[in-house]
Image (cartoon, rainbow, N blue to C red; front, top):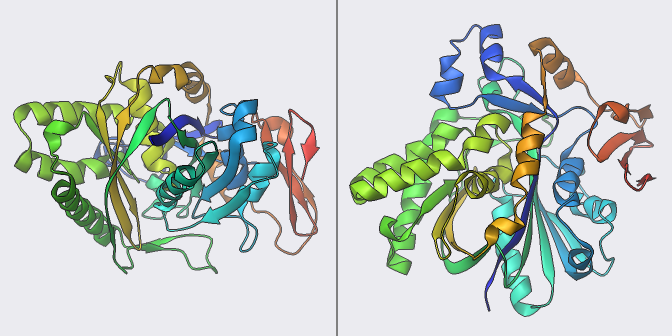
Amino acid sequence: MEIGIDKIGFYAPDLYMDMRELAVARGIEPDKFTIGIGQEKMAIAPITQDTVTLAANAALNLLDEKDKEAIDLVIFGTETGIDQSKSAAVYVHELLGLDPVARSFEIKQACYGATAGIQMAKGHVALNPDSKVLVLASDIAKYGLNSPGESTQGAGAVALVISANPKIMVLENNSAYLTSDIMDFWRPTYSDMAFVDGKFSNEQYILFFETVWKQYKAKSGLGFKDFEALCFHVPYTKMGLKALKPVLEEEGTTEDQKRMLENYQKSIQYNKIVGNIYTGSLYLSLLSLLEQKEELKEGSRIGLFSYGSGAVGEFFTGIMQPGYQTQLNTIQNTDRLSSRRKISVEEYESIFKQELPVDGSTIELDIEKDSAAICLAGMSENKRQYINKRTYGSN
C-alpha cells in the first residue's frame, strides 16, 4: 500500500515585520539579517491568533466534506501549545467540524513534532486504509525583544492530510533517525521565551544531518544522484545550506550540486518571508518547493530533513505523484503572502507585549481587525474563546 501526503495547506498571520527595518532599529547592519541568515520578512501573530487558530486556518480551506468524514485521527505537533492538559488538536477538531468518531492529540519534541505525527499517521493508515489523518504543525516562535534570537522569530501553520494512494507525494519506508540528550534549545514551563545556545545548536543540526544522511545511504543504497531536491527544517534559511553544502561538495557531482542548490533556493522562498515556524518549518519548505518549482517530474524523489532541538533528527523521502499540481493552492498562497500588512517596529513591539490574562479574568478581543476566518475572541473563566466567523460558532 502506498501512503503519503494527499493535501497540504498553509496559513500565516496577515501582519509582517520588514527585517531591514528591524535591523536598523536594533543598530545592526541590515545585510546581517537579509544575507547573513537569509531572512527578509517575519510574520507577526496578533493577539487574536494562537497556535490553535493558525492550525485551524491552515486546514480550513484544505478539507472537503469527504475528507471530514474520512479523518479519524488528528495529530497536532507544536512546541508552543496553549494548555498543559487539553490538546490543541481537540480545539481544531471542533472548529473544523470533523467527525466526532476520531482520535485527537498533541505531540511535542521541539521542531520534530509534526514529523513524528506524520510517521504515526502512516502506521494508522496502514492499519485503516480507508481512513485519513490530519497532521497539523503550528507554532509562534518568540525569543524576546532585543534578544539574540529575535531575528529568527515567526508564526504560521502547515496542515497535511495523510492517506492511502496520495495525490501529492508517496512517503517511502526507508528512514534514518537519531536521538541525543543535549541542551541546544529548550523552554521550561515557567518561561514564555525559549532559551538557546545558538552556536551549539547550529553545530548539532549539521552533525545530525551528516549522521542521518550516512545512515540513510547505508540503508537505501541511494545518493544525491537519486534525488531531485532536499528540503530542510530551516530556523533561518541559511541553516539548511550550512548542513547541505559540505556533504554535497564531498559526494555530489557538478550536476548534482547545481540541481540541489537551485532547488534549495526554491524551497526557502516562503520561509524567507514568514520566518521560523518551528514544527511547520520543514513542511513550509516542502510547500515552497512544490509551488515555486515550475515542475517536478512524476517519480522525482524529494529528501526531507527534520530536526528538533533537544534533540531528535530524521531523514526520510517521498516520491512525487502525477498531477500533484492540481492539489496545490499556489495562487491563494501567493496572494495571501503578498497582501499582508507591513507594520512598524513600534507596532511590532506593542503586539509582542500584549498578553492574555492569567488570573481568570475576562477579556474580549477585537476580531474584526483580523482577516482570518478563525480567531481567538477572548477569555472567560480561564477558557479561551474561539470563533469560526463562517459558522458564527464558538467554543
